[in-house]
Length: 240
Image (cartoon, rainbow, N blue to C red; front, side, top):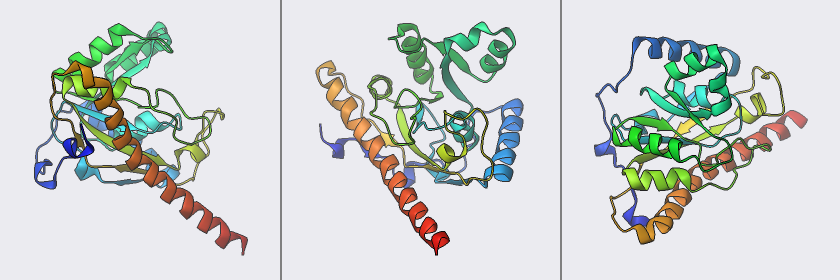
């Protein structure tokens, strides 16, 4: 299989006026989160028209900050589902809260078959999920190697994938800091959805997953390089 067989969704295929599934509580939460990021980080969202209005859909951002889940979700008009560390579900109040917002448990650093089954069920129900292809936060802000899970589940479920590049969030709230650092600018860019053709050949599943990962990574890396160049230019101006 070549990259030409896994095509980005064309502009004519992107929904223009369809309102995705949502709820009053979800929209209120989105509004509060968006206002927070606008005030404290002057957030800019780009490419939101690239987000398909119908699932199955996976939102696939790079992961550099505690901010990433609410930051990326706030820019998506879908109600989304999330994987969350299973230890969080042992905290009574927190369990009810994150469950209400679509989270379900996954065991960290293990092949959690129940989480995979739940994810495939959600995608086959034509819902939207956020999955970080790196599997965890980057400690240095650079893109880590991708795990196979996201791509393989997308191949199995025939889900489209929207790569998302988050820049500025690492400077705002890296995992080494207990509290965020306000007034660092953040940008979130959603790229055209990767459309995976259905396939029944299990022998080339790994090959297909590797190609999907390459397509996701190429979009994110391109944006991260551009952001790094811009930061260097601004640093030079300030040094003059």
